[in-house]
Image 1 (tube, rainbow, N blue to C red):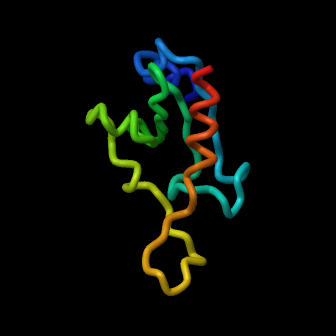
Image 2 (image 1 turned 180 degrees about the vertical axis):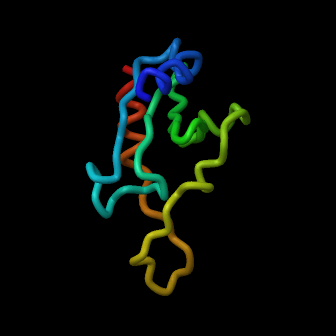
Length: 104
């Protein structure tokens, strides 16, 4: 499965610094997605992508501006401790930070 995922990701990360698999179990309650695992990748000058279930999602503004990737909100998990402020999502900052570190 990992080889298939790398094959599918290759065009997206060919000009990038790398990619890394991430899993819910590694993040605990801080896991920001509704899926169990995926691959974080950097493309170009800092477009952070998340790939899961054969779909690529734009994670940060640079990736969103491309307009060719899925909307991360489709799999972005609601924060169960949101209080009375309405819908609040779990912070996605750790995923963005990881993705940007892969660009270096």
